[in-house]
Length: 302
Image 1 (cartoon, rainbow, N blue to C red):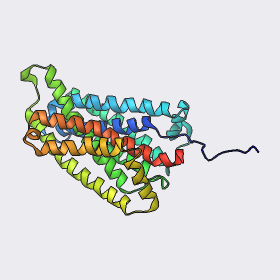
Image 2 (cartoon, one colour; image 1 turned 90 degrees about the vertical axis):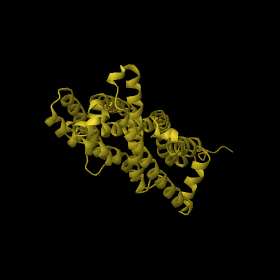
Image 3 (cartoon, rainbow, N blue to C red; image 1 turned 90 degrees about the horizontal axis):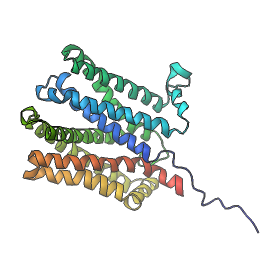
């Protein structure tokens, strides 16, 4: 007797690794711009010398991920639906609609800030820096919101998702800034190198951020351990299928190893901070992969 078997029908994962790469690169861009704005927008002189350099990197990253997002749609022309003036399909109740505005506004603001930094126009650089700074923060907050507002996908459906994404973005961006400064100093003459105090200050910021992120992750895992059946099921998937991305890559490589480095004398040196920064930047990609794909795993394969 013939019959149709549908129990093993696999469903397409709509948000895959390209979206995780978008979250990762957008977060790095936002965190780098935070550092770039300290010089001209907030008047911290020691950061002025790297403002233009880091702004160019931030703009390059956010521009690249927009191309990635458009092609991930499958139907490239549908990207126009996110802009109300063009097609009229935009709707204010859709988080992704607001996200498209944030991405576009942040990109334009960062470009204008970089232009006036290059022209050494302190007044306009300060204006566009202060204008774009909250847009950068809102962009990374929104990425978590886009995931948390889907009630059927754990661990995304939690108010902590936006905070985790915001903190992770800043950590990866600050770490990338350390790596960029180190790379720049490697190719320039000694008299043109950035003051070591800049990396030392970034190292202190990273230690505070890592400590806070570890607390957030602990709180989230505690919630899943004593939570609903869906939450416990998600925790089981994280500890088995995604143990490489989340427990090892994100928590181990991205948080625990840098935390240990910062607690040693090596972590108070320039080389130690650069090493810890490299672990953070790599590890945060595991966080993005885990939080994007874990919530879709059960729906896709069971």
